[in-house]
Amino acid sequence: MSRLTIISHTEHYLTPGGTLVGLGATVTELNHLVAIFDTVTHVAMLHTTPAPASALPYTSSHIHFIALPAVGGPHGSDKLSVLFSAPTVLKTIRRALKGSDYFQFRAPTGIGVFVIPYLIFSSKKGWFKYAGNWKQAHAPLAYRFQKWLLTHQSRPVTINGFWEDQPAHCLSFENPCLTNEEVENGAVDRNHKTLQAPINFCFVGRLEPAKGVDLIIEAFAKMDASQLSKVGQIHFVGTGSKARRYQKLAETLAVPIVFHGVLSREAVHAVYQQCHAILLPSQSEGFPKVIAEAMNYGCVPIVSEVSSIGHYIRDGQQGFLLEHISVQGLLDVLEHFLKLSTVSYVDMLQNISTAYLEPFTYRHYNQRLRNELVSAAENR
Image 1 (cartoon, one colour):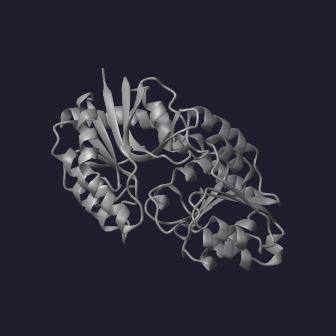
Image 2 (spheres, one colour):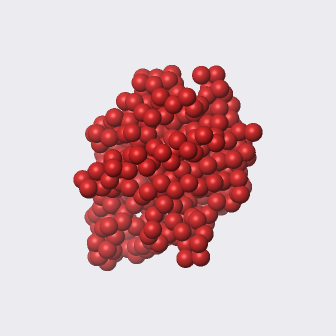
Image 3 (spheres, one colour):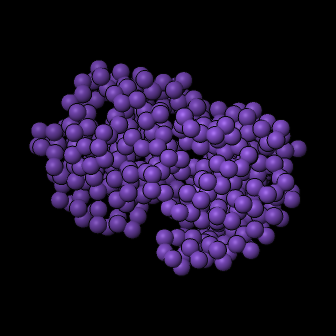
């Protein structure tokens, strides 16, 4: 019997009917892990706020949830609450680990500053997942500390991208986000897409300046009339504290912008199916799952060349990498994209093949996890 305990800051909620739901991307990943583990226990944060539409329930009785207090945030008092929670968090984790064979801790996160040291000195077998930007130039102090800890210990660490100076125990892993059925369905969508007006764009993520939402709106505001005439709709999926400001700015544009708020996984896929490109001119990322998901449904990525994104997207082949993360830099690429011939666009979609997307499937991830991480934990 193999039992895995995952420790993360993943948000969980209780619906009015009492059903436990959690952040959709992570919950979906865990739902697939029961294919290789007999039980999966998730130690994560339980919030008292209403659940967003993207939250999903666990689909197996072999997945168990253990609640941590919902701590952390951008303010100084929030960071102090993380430290004050340490005794409760560590006590909860210690109890959960007693009933498991392996652990996975997901960093970086506020509680990582004390949970990672605890796990390093634990006798329990396991590994770490660093989901952020492994090469972030100006990372927060807590993130830099966690990366330093993970670099100077011996358990496996999965990271985004391929780096010349990465330690031997830091393994390049793709973020799983697609089922094999979704890849098959996506191939049908890609085979039927052409680049003919009206051309639709989408953004999926937090609505905030760091993700490039300001740049997107300003770039379309500066686009000339001949180019704008080819644009159909711009779809924004997600929410954030500045959502109302972005909606006001959008009212001044000459193209329709649709703000969907937070959507279910299926509804987000439906947005991809009607769009030709996904825009993500963000300042810092690991490798966002939304890029691979959008590509699966024929959305060419127009993205920043930050962190590991350029390791997977070759400029002009599967998508476009922004040379400059600026309004003009994005505008230049958008105007180039709008001038593409249908032949060039179809050629790009053909570069996004089933074989190209296979590393982003849950099946591929499970195989690597079992063959490499569990094996490494056993041989440590």
